Length: 128
Figure (tube, rainbow, N blue to C red):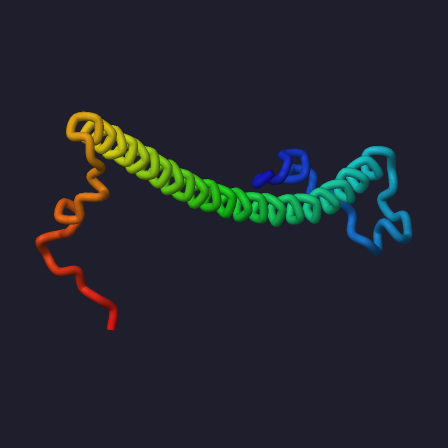
C-alpha cells in the first residue's frame, strides 16, 4: 500500500500526453496498452491515498480501543478489590457474631446488654 506498483513506475514515462491521446498521435496497440496502464496507475494513486487515510484512521481507533480496554481493566481490578474487601469484612462480621454467640452460651448473658464492654475507653468525636 505504501509503494507504487513496479509496472506503474516503469511505464509512467512511456505514457503519451493528453494532447497526443486526444488527437491519436502515436497511436498503436502497444501505446494504447501503456496509456491504459497509465490511467489505471492514476486511479491507483487516489485509491492508495484513500487507503492511507483509512489506515491512519484505523490505527487511531485501535489506539483509542486499547486505551479504553486498559481503563476497563483498571475498573475491573478496582471492582474485584472492592468485592474482596466486602467479602473479607463479611467474614469478619460473621466471626464476631459467632464469638458473641459463643460468649452468650458460655456466660449466659448478651455482650450487647453489657454496656461497659461496648463503651470505648476513648472519647468519640461529635459533629459540631
